[in-house]
Image 1 (cartoon, rainbow, N blue to C red):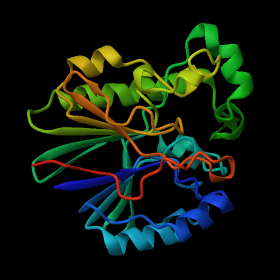
Image 2 (cartoon, helix red, strand yellow):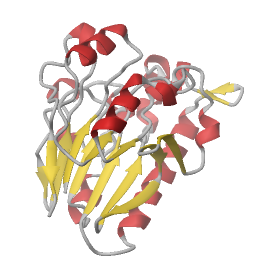
Image 3 (tube, rainbow, N blue to C red):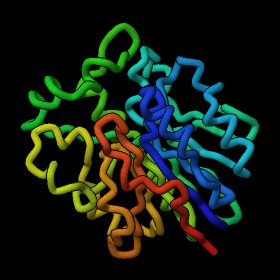
Image 4 (cartoon, rainbow, N blue to C red):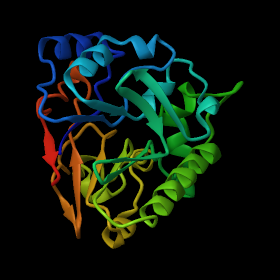
Length: 254
């Protein structure tokens, strides 16, 4: 089975929409995975031209929400529980869900991160999640953000213990600093983008972990014991983050 993957298409920006229209994905797998930050939810999300196009070019497409999906006013509290939403007959938005395809187990989760106490002030002030994401009639808090991560991580840890076999984990947030760009190493807000689950990954039976969110593809292909880390992030075209994006990145699992 060939599995194509990408993330951070950010179609809420006109520059990204134009770039992807001029440089569409090159189908290279039966399955396409989009690991978050596709567009704002609530803006006729299910009718995006992208989803109609990928529906015609892939057998199955799985999309997870990133953080930006919730920037457009969509109430994050409506997605507190695991869900699977049909966008097209073969295109699904899902979170904290396990799917098995041809004997391969896929685990899908936004993941979020865990903000450490020493970073709360900087993250609260400078990370847009805590100014733009709505939870009911309130703005997302650090405590709830950390709760979202705890629930997501519990889903992943519980699911990988369920059975043996090939396993692919798909998250938006980056689960290890070992795959992050060194330019962010000393950033006071790095904690909102990366959560350090390195020990868990190296002890797991996960074969592949696909991630996004950080707009740098330096971690693509890195092996952490038996787990291969994968990313293919478009990023913001208007600030030239897209130059190492691949239109046809895929893995093949026998």
